[in-house]
Length: 77
Image 1: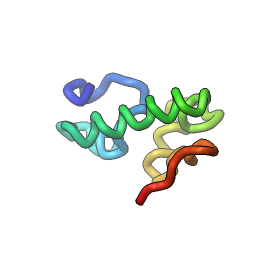
Image 2 (image 1 turned 45 degrees about the vertical axis):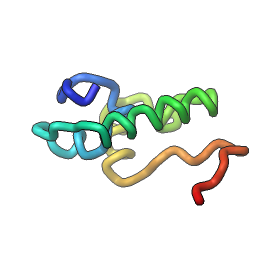
Image 3 (image 1 turned 60 degrees about the horizontal axis):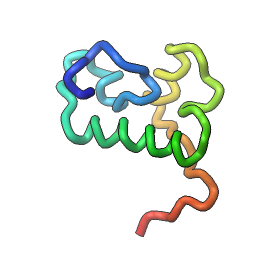
Image 4 (image 1 turned 135 degrees about the vertical axis):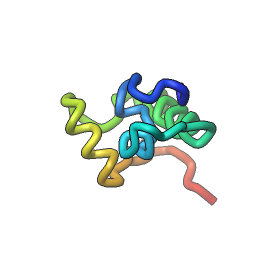
């Protein structure tokens, strides 16, 4: 996933790759995407709320917004 710079759904992409088209990605980008997928599986909801337009999703991510933990999700230590 981190190898394709222009491809992929923006809701699952590392915000750094949305800010910079030449961003190379790597393990951190992959972990961000995996986290979004795991959040989606555990919550049963789509990431980024009801935002459908790609531009709305990108603005949401670039402004630092993240999906809230689903009730019952263990908190960080």
